[in-house]
Length: 118
Image 1 (cartoon, rainbow, N blue to C red):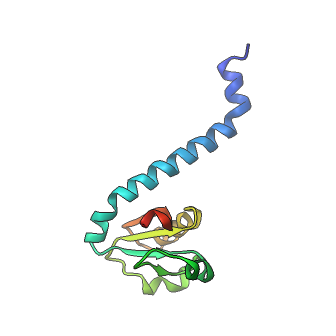
Image 2: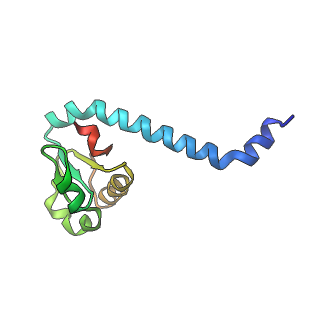
Image 3: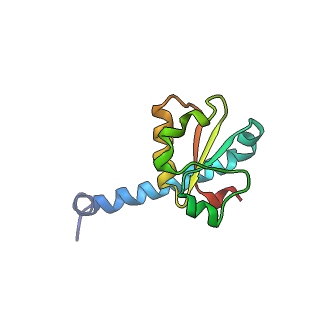
C-alpha cells in the first residue's frame, strides 16, 4: 500500500495543475460576481484576442487590443477606470493583466473567456 508521502512525491505535478485550474475557476467566478459593480464604476472591457477572433464574435461594448499590441497601446487605456480583460480561455488575458500591472494599472480584472461577459 502506498503512503501519502509517496503519492505526493509521484503525483505532485498533477496536483499542482489541478490546484491551478481550481484557482482559475474560483477567480473567474469572483470577477463575474464583480461585473455589475465594475460596470457601474465605468469599467473598460478589453478583449486581447486577435483581430480575426474578435471579428468573429465578441462581447457587446468590449474593445479589441490584441495581446501583442497591448504594450504599444497603453496610452489608449484609462488608468483611472477599472479594466476587465478577456480572451478565449483566460490565458492571454492573464498575461495582459501582468503587463498592465507592470505599467502602473491598479484596478485590473481577468474574467477569463469573453463568453463570461454575456
